[in-house]
Image (cartoon, rainbow, N blue to C red):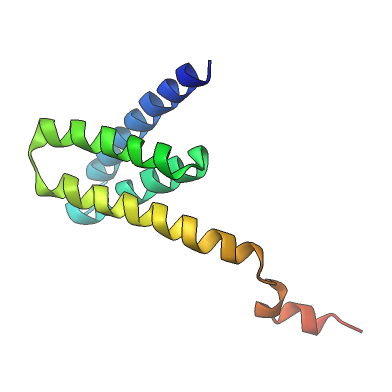
Length: 114
């Protein structure tokens, strides 16, 4: 059942990134910015949903290799690097943020103390 669920998530994520690229293109967004934002959002979605580095990398490699076979474009490889960098940043930064006290960054705590 888990394998079927992951296949459905893969299909939904592929459709969502394709729709994002089409919607951003129809809105008149710059092509490079469009591809950057789409790869960034896809990387965040897959990394946070799967929470495993190997599964996330396999999803990235699977999707972008299929996309590369269709288009033969260097932009697809750049999108793969963006998604992989998002994966590395989330896996390196997120555990460090769990240990950080966030309230020391805000001034509002000091204003309301009696």
